[in-house]
Length: 167
Image (cartoon, rainbow, N blue to C red; front, side, top):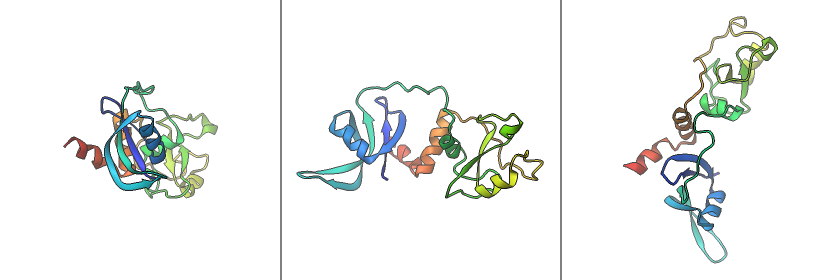
């Protein structure tokens, strides 16, 4: 899937969307294109260049600008899909691991949940990392909005694109 970066009307980063959604927004005149890709979509009577970066015409207030909401997907992004026990990139079926297991009162929070490969998750089981003879690569923390967006852009391979746009 081709990803399209969505900027707010004030040029702040909002999100990434698929190219089909971006073209729908373009047709409805809700966005303007800042930069195009090299790809072209052939329609019945026209050709449309696929956008890479779009900017909303009207300013949209973001609901969670004070903090990043916690979810499995956001945990994976924070940890860059890297197992926090063995350090391997988890390409297929990443799992989350509760550092303090739920059975021992652990919660689903930024500071208690990390990305783990299936092998490490099964090895640790319902134990504490020290009991299982495992150590974390880095201490999990709640990311700021800017840290999270930077990691997300890096994951998508778009980290240098926004810098390029401003230069």
